[in-house]
Image 1: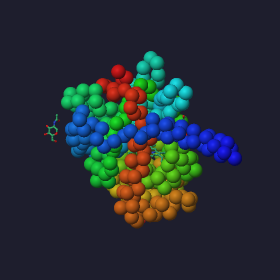
Image 2 (image 1 turned 30 degrees about the vertical axis):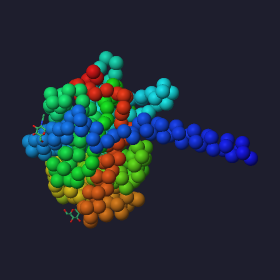
Image 3 (image 1 turned 120 degrees about the vertical axis):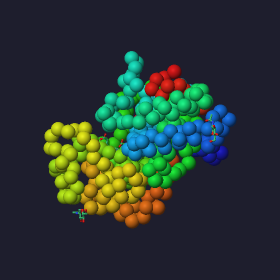
Image 4 (image 1 turned 90 degrees about the vertical axis):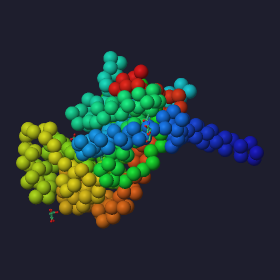
Length: 335
Ligand code: HEM
Ligand SMILES: *[C@@H]1O[C@H](CO)[C@@H](O)[C@H](O)[C@H]1NC(C)=O
Ligand SMILES: *[C@@H]1O[C@H](CO)[C@@H](O)[C@H](O)[C@H]1NC(C)=O
Ligand SMILES: *[C@@H]1O[C@H](CO)[C@@H](O)[C@H](O)[C@H]1NC(C)=O
């Protein structure tokens, strides 16, 4: 009896230990006071730069938010723990790396190419931080804090960004192509893409509320515009800028009502067939997420709270910590 008792526990105990070890290695080390001794001003440097960038161009707030999302959702580098266990890294600034002879970075991936922006603002922040706190603040932390400051600058909610992320030494074009959701995704495709990263459908809907700010190119919504049920008043104005062929890069706001204000108008638009992307309108198309759209449409405080909580979760997607990765001195290149 005694031996069967102990053997029935030993394997689960080992599994539990392994799980604690792996998750501890991967994500338990972000803290609020990580730079308290080494760079106490890091957050005000980032906030000042983000505010000034958003003041000169409101869309930059949207671009900075998206940059962080596209960093965190991509398993760019495989990092080996004790040479056996592989961890897939998320918020590791891999999105910022330019191509090199040894790898093709993520900037030319389908969802990023000719689309992601804000790299110059991150470079400015990094060079300011290198001046005051040399080789201390990671590019991955800059992205996480800048995304929060960008949302706040456009009138959205704030959240706590714990820090201590480190930067990857590689990037993955194929992971960027396969991990990021597509504007042609169905509702079930969206739910799967987010579920692969540990988010439920409610969190997916809240995070999609990011499309209350920013712009999209004609090429990303043309098929919806000419083939689906788009509210006729919106369709008329969109067609003027997005003809059935050509003008692929001409921009339209994701939220035509208030494109530079982080509010819940995105959800109100979905209720009247004014979603810009096919993927946006999928959230309110008679399916399982309609009720959540209705909730966020009628209660902006609930949206703000759920969005902020989901952003905390996104910002914590398997960062590199401890002695893994590095602190890049130039966010575009490994040291
Ligand atoms: C739900 C699945 C999602 C899909 C399919 C999607 C797709 C897209 C597409 C196609 C664009 C336009 C890109 C272009 O034309 O250049 C865009 C823009 C944007 N996305 Fe998403 N997105 C999704 C979720 C998210 C999430 C979770 C966030 C942030 C947490 C986000 C933030 C943004 C922002 C802020 C913009 C505007 C960027 C700018 O103006 O520079 N998106 N998205
Ligand atoms: C740090 O921040 C304080 C107050 O925000 C400011 O007075 C000081 O000049 C800053 N120092 C640096 C090096 O940026
Ligand atoms: C990325 O990581 C997630 C877990 O976070 C996993 O489900 C997914 O299969 C991975 N994708 C790739 C391409 O490695
Ligand atoms: C289209 O939008 C208008 C408001 O601009 C709204 O009154 C109308 O109900 C919408 N149509 C549909 C089919 O949702």
